[in-house]
Amino acid sequence: MRVLVAPDKFKGSLSALEVAEAVGAGLASVGVDASLLPVADGGDGSVAAALHAGFSARHVRVHGADNRWHDTVFAFDGTTAVVEVANTCGLATLTELAPMTASSRGFGEAVAAALAAGARRVVLCLGGSASTDGGAGMLNALGVRFEGFPADGNLRRITGVSGRPDLGGVELVVATDVVTPLLQAATVFGPQKGATPEQVVELEARLAHFARLLGSPSLADEPGTGAAGGVGFACRWLGARRVAGAEYFLDLVGFDRALDGCAAVITGEGRLDGQTAAGKLPAVVAARAAPRPVSAVVGQSLLTEEEHHRLGLRDVLALADLSTEDPSRDAVLSRRLCEEAGARLGRKISTTFCQDRPRSP
Image: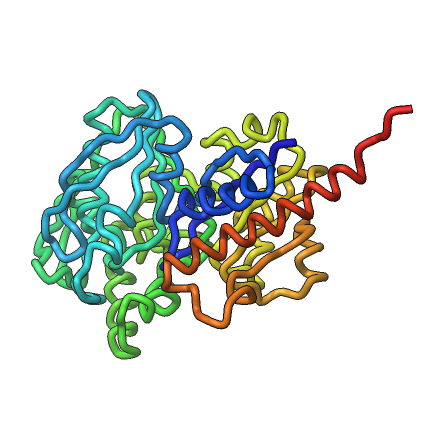
């Protein structure tokens, strides 16, 4: 019997690969073989998931959200490149929050590097962003010229735009489950990036001006254009198509192939809540893996057992319920608890598997 371990990251403590390795170690401790497939939904960790699935790392030097240079990577298989906001100009590139000045320029620089490498498809992963600049920084890095664009990133000072880039027929894919439109981006996500209520109002006014400037006020109303502080809007302005992040990435990393020969699946993410059913990874994994039994190891669950079952999850083990300490910011504790959860699920899966196997006459 083999179990496929296919979790997302536990934001703040463990990467998807670290979760998979810890759960796999727990399974191994009770004699259960595991195949590890860290997955993503188009947010931070998407490049790492692609690399684990066999993509090659391409190194690139870009500007972080605070305009300082740093080294990062995108994933490339010779045709498709996976580029993410999080490791180029996301929150992790800041030493302190900068809600009014953080830029998406580094993301555009990484996209430009992917195009220069010969990518025919670029998957744009928008989670973990630090900025609310409508994607202006990204567009500027790709060759769009803005008259009056100041160093502080105030979009309302831009008076003109020129130089829409020629992407040479390259397919752009925005992999995100965010449905927020552009003109709600600051309200929904600004506080997470450090914006005060007054700054949120100013950021919304900047985004509205930017949408008018690009001649695309109707595009600003589309679901998903508010992703990554409006980078979703800039991507759509360039002609990108939006896809469901979890479904797309399961295909990209070969989830269905990885299922072959596996009797059960263990998935997971940082938290199960009321949004999980709306296309988040555990629900999508459970649907794709059926009729195999699917369990989940999560940081925390706000759902009832009945809701777990409606998601297609047979068992859910939450790290928060396995310790009196808080594992959410403690990588060592989280790793140990993931191993414990893997061992518990391994014993249960083994028992169920043996009971369900047809007996020889």
